[in-house]
Length: 520
Image (cartoon, rainbow, N blue to C red):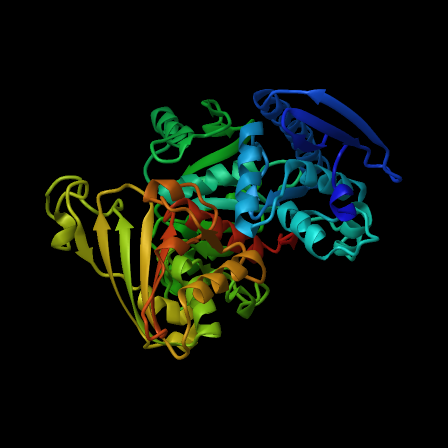
């Protein structure tokens, strides 16, 4: 009990009920604890209101600490990988509820407030810290004599030295679905903790005031992902976008090698090519011939270049030795983390991947000519069988699976949100409970916690996973294991736009050499 009390702030109260009587114990977070007892007759409804009021007050304090750490110290707090910056009180409390369900342990906002206070007392380098994980670990493994301040100091020891990060200039080459989501993410994180700075966007065709307004409108408003929670304005004098007050040059070319980015103050930049037009090493090398460009990252599978699923094989390719990288495909990023766990723990003998994928921009809205027969049929009206290279592509990420997977895909009439179904034959026997627990453990700890989200909802549907930061959302309630224990069917949801964009961002930071200390 003592260990739990040390996490509680002055605004928290423990409640003991006997019929209508509530005993409230207020606690100071300064040792030794002082307790104040108050008894009162209170109705169950008033009791609930009192609890919610104090929870919301704690959430307000928590939000202030989150913002202070981010804007003053470049320290970003998350809760089991879910972002906390720019969240309101209701969102903060909802994320705490998710955290409690995820670890099957109560994690309250009163806990995280005290952990956040402890972090604030430390002198840390620019960091990304999972406060949910720290709160969980304090309850689970902290020695009885540890208070929250000494425990957090020990856990983050070795990272209490200031290490500055020089932000990297970024050029978005292309401004489609993925490009605009990357632009949103880059500009929302543009501040004291900036690692990547969006300096220019390159498209084809002339840049005039009408085009600029249309580009800005598409950035500000999105039919799937909603309104951009910031400001998007047009600077007609300089022909730039002003996003959250920062200028982004709008440029045009059909020849990447002809660009001189240094005339716009851009140096040693990372180009993120999201056009899909250049996929080979020789084609992507054209970017490196432009002045001001140092690295290239492709948001599609590439040929002759490192194909990377961040969290799995990025360390195989040192950024100092390579200049061009691929972030593979959205489907590969969804299945590779799950397959890695399954192969390492169970041993995958063989299997089949079926992707139920949202329709994409290369399909027709109405029946019309197309280079591929089925993709010429109306995307919003038909399920369309098509091919996917994810089964073969994953072997580039996980060589041990080469030749073991077949794959196919069905495009369905939803604009975003996809599902990968893995039918796997294992070398070892397992049960439904064991299999789910394996993936729950890897979603909680290890090297894939940013890639795998463990979902236990009974009612998960495709629209629920839109906006998920994880590329792989494991639907535990859908898992099936045959009676022989060696065959299982796993269901992995993925936001094929936003979840993939988050993986691109993680890889971009690695390629650019601006990764912070991360505790998760």
